Image (cartoon, rainbow, N blue to C red; front, side):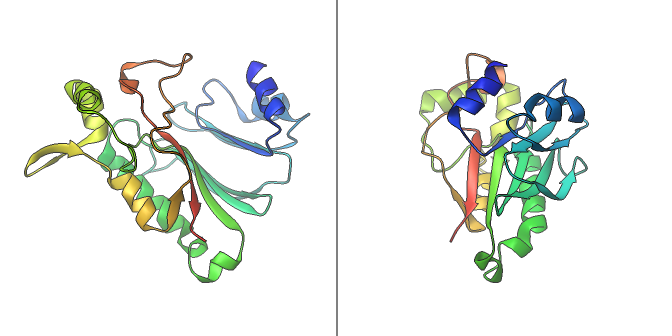
Length: 212
């Protein structure tokens, strides 16, 4: 109820959720319907379900929880804006790169020069990816590198050793998607969710919009 009150207080029109653990489609719709009568929900294989609510009609374009997506994505349109809501792989930057490639392939017709006269396109969600636009201290990177799980999550092995794998983020930027966030405006850890995968202050939750 606190989350619902917070969303209503902010008077936002559309909200995406990437960790609807323990929810189902009917529960999700019923909980928000008095303020947000339109919703879409994706049951994932991992239990980290995805969902979006809107004050305006939602047109579902595509949704999948199949490979190469670890959790999945929902591609929908509302308020004349097309959104891809996703939650990328939490374990491997290599797999996140494949996921980004797939999302870009699905949305390619909407990123063309011709489609820019059409509705806006935004990617939103938990990208689990470090951004080359952000700056991390040696201490922060060492802390990430020293744990095998976060090392695999954020680093890649090259002929010169290990380095931070920014490729998922950079592929989005190279594909005419604009990172709307502020550098180092960290999104984890939070008081409600602190774990080793959030070893230091990181900006993992992002919004990208198609370049005009």
